[in-house]
Image (cartoon, rainbow, N blue to C red):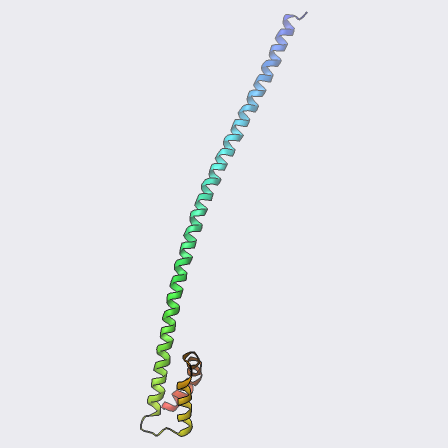
Length: 134
């Protein structure tokens, strides 16, 4: 038979077990709350990163458009430079002096070149044009 002391000891053991279980439940709740907060933080961070990535893509597209515009302007300026260099060459060559036959052949060959090739020739012939004009 169980005595009062046995019942008392059993009640204390049950009480200790109950408190231990409650502590473990509280710790589990805290861990779940921390994990939930961490997941919420990660979700918020992922949304912010997605927005930043979208903004970066928009900026890249804007920069590409700007670069294309600048390239078009550069092409226009190159074309104007070629025309100006050609006009200077012709003006310096025809400044009251008859053009030698060899130079006439070079000028007519130059004028028959396609524009992309003229640009390369123009760059190479600038010192010649400058010295001819002096």
